[in-house]
Image (cartoon, rainbow, N blue to C red; front, side):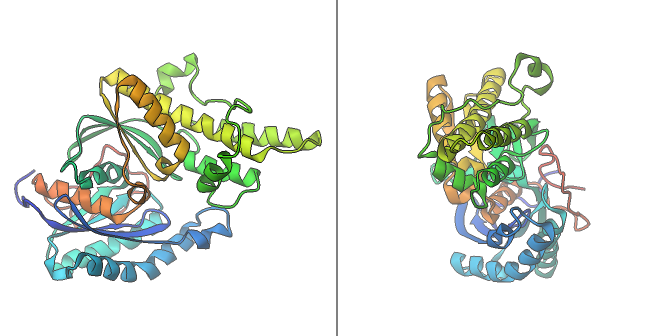
Length: 357
């Protein structure tokens, strides 16, 4: 149902707490006013990965500070806001609860709508903040890749119709980066470390397997991803070299692994563009910051005549601005807010853009 909350340029505050970043963003319509983020990544580094309980506590401690920081940056007060938007899933349940609880409290105390939104669709919505456009161009294929998600979406309409084409059936790409980094003795988080290390290596040193790309995979897993086999292949390769007493070429192993990931991601995304006749690809999520993924996507999109859209690096990773942007777009399209009874859903499918009655 539309029509109740139609506004031309609503002032929306968005909260993102799905993993280890506490993000608060503020937008006015399609204009970004503030994007404040606090990360608890350093606290997780000692464990080699995100610990849900640690993440939730970090959100509790950081959220009040980040809220005030965003309001100050935007030059507004709580009383100026027209709506509150928040990530309700997918993500870590405990972490999501912190953000959703805060968003509900703010909405009730201020007497304004509350939008419980999908984290994955938020990554697509951030494109609305590009000064050169005021909305996401649709249809578009969106490849969203991070430590927790690897998803391929067909966006028919940002606020009302998003279709999940495929996703990882085991490890997310970012998770594979972290695990391979550990095998290679590189610090956490693995993505930036492998990217840095790979610049000194040979990506053709060794051809690691490309999961779910064989002809037999096309019927059932054409748009799905699998990185557990790739991770295992790297580990076995390293073990074999160590057993034979050979010196490890860490940079070239990292480069070859990174090449395999980038090849699979870009190939499947462009395959979806071709299959659905959509001449546009958007990259989002933390792994979209990877230099090889970006370069290969640019190269192959230019060759295929596909328009490529990649948000600025600070808007690729998790942030509250993308949630505020999606909330503003929903509000401007006339969608009412979510019921206050809305809870969190750690496995919320991408096709559910917002929780509604």
